[in-house]
Image 1: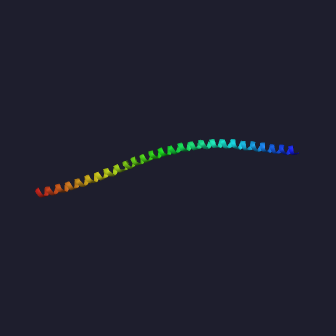
Image 2: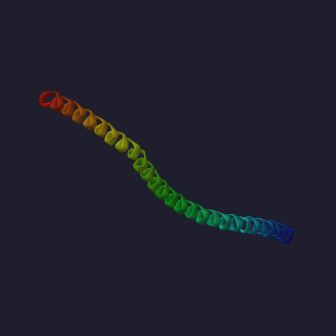
Image 3: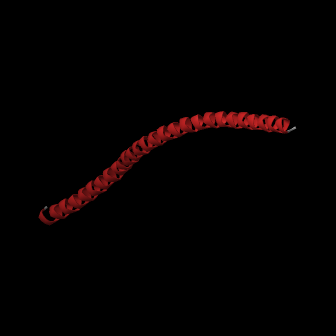
Length: 98
């Protein structure tokens, strides 16, 4: 009987070893997938960094473009005021000497 107990025990151990080996093989596959996902994540992170830098550059350009109309409007107002002042001075000079 003792030999039969050893045989049964040995059979159980062999089944457990096969089960553990199968689980280990599955974990190796999962580990490989995780490594691939990690590499893809690193690549996406780098692409996002470049995209953010490009976006910041575009925002700066848009900000510069938004300032141009304001500058033109300020110049226009300055020119109108100068023309009015010159006209008033011309009128005063013409009335005074004319």
